[in-house]
Length: 398
Image 1: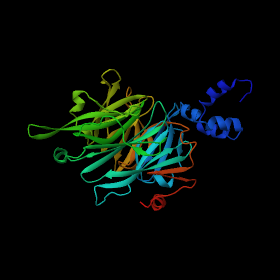
Image 2: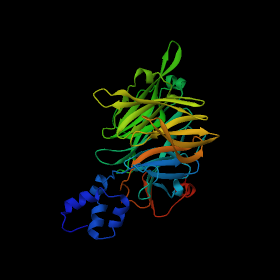
Image 3: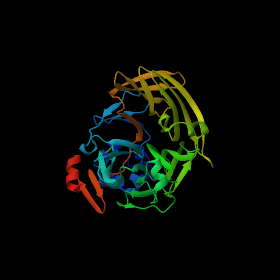
Image 4: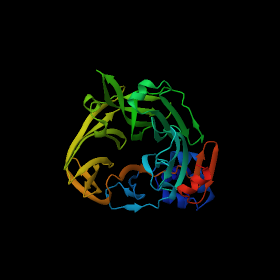
């Protein structure tokens, strides 16, 4: 870069470069390495180029697709670290992909231990966080992830609550137990603020957006001697660490949670109401308008004929809908253009129900970490080698 340009201008130019170029710049001079490695530069850098990450969770295959005017031509198959083989994808935030490892599908007690992995797909670095006291049996645990807007500090939220409606009424212990892990602290701690009502049950569907983590949820109520549910959204402010409830329009609140999906469209939260039937998918996209009281507006709808079944998985940056279509036991990804109703096959096929899609932008978060860092209570382990599940479990004596 020319020495004739003031350093401040060079710095602003560098913030718009792709991660690969910045990594190369670090070897040019000590000044550039010091600048790029600084906490300030890492926290303020964010590439403007959007990408889609397609996960084949059954085969542990991850494909990054540049979400630009050449979509879907620029595809890159990522080298998958051993630690994230056969993980469930939770969400992405600020360029970090959050995955969940369920080490034990069954445990004789009510609680067990799992792990959350944060993966920077751009610089190939990972952070593993052991999640203690995971609910099992009558208790259920959901994990949320996002990056705090003010501090750019990755946070993991662990919520354990009573799962069964009958137990909600009879168990007198604390119905919700919440712990927060901040990467800057490296330990789990209890938040200081309010918790949701004990009648609320979360789903696995979560979105991190603009400093909040959102979950699709349902409120379990007893009415006329019957158990009834009402769909809603629960939010967690990553700065104040407060929970809030977001009401849905009546038509969505009365919709069964299995027919609702939540995602983000550019920088907005959207809820998808979908009717999944054999050979046909009907869906309506609602967008949240952020005001004093959050409200939802109907954005558009669509109808897709399918050989068997189909459902919405997410959105491109330009608003096109990403759909998984099931055909002859396999799942394939297509893109639906709302205005023309045209469907474009992406040529990505895997076992049915094993595909997931999330959007991300390149980031330098975790650049100051070794290849793999594992947090287990008060112990922190650091590695420069690619370790497997079994090796980690052996080291942690899990």
